[in-house]
Image (tube, rainbow, N blue to C red):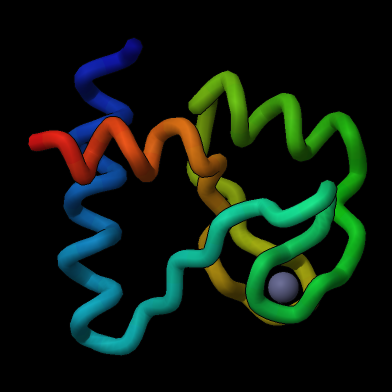
Length: 73
Ligand SMILES: [Zn+2]
């Protein structure tokens, strides 16, 4: 677990309250607009390499595992 990523994620969540949407990946698709997410992008998201935004709706994509991790804090 990359602590820096968690920090970034927490910051995004705080931004979400100001209108920036963060959505989970649901069944290989964006949780916001349900567009399919290419496998390579899903890997990037799961590896927490960088912040990935949905190319269709612009929402920031996160995987559910990290969501739970951040909620623990
Ligand atoms: Zn989307």
